[in-house]
Length: 189
Image (cartoon, rainbow, N blue to C red; front, top):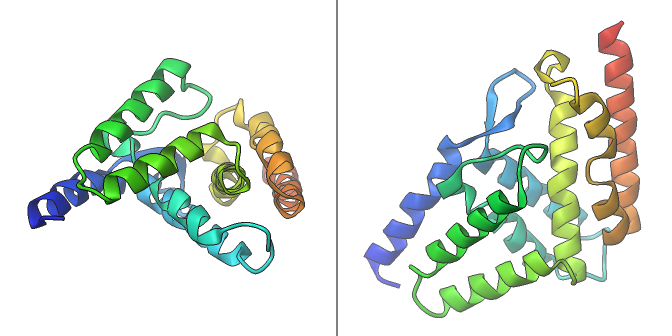
């Protein structure tokens, strides 16, 4: 990889620090896409010794890279994102990867295809963690930052992904939903 290829790619990826998500932090500040990706990666690292039949090196790579397209497209909240939006984001990911030399290009492209297919245990775990982190972040954010639809969405978001991934993720998601219910009950009172 040349210095130019390295810096060109990293300079585009830096937008993940600038592009904010719909979520806010516990202090009410808009969360960046990079912050979300970092915590999804940290969650995977924490589960490495809990889920023994998966390649966590691959999962952590997926978590780090999963929102790379949002460096170009920005974030669109899941409840507003259309299939066309997802297709455009995927196209931008592959266009960005085309700027990489070999062997990085083939490694990244293969990983993204695996992530999109959601067939492997690793892809299912990364996807469940991605959704779970969003639920956790909403639980940490002030209730005043929630939209009315999020009172229900935070209790259903990621259910299917967690159930398909692993019993540990299913249990963690159920615990996060209990936190959601307590938050709504407590902060609405």
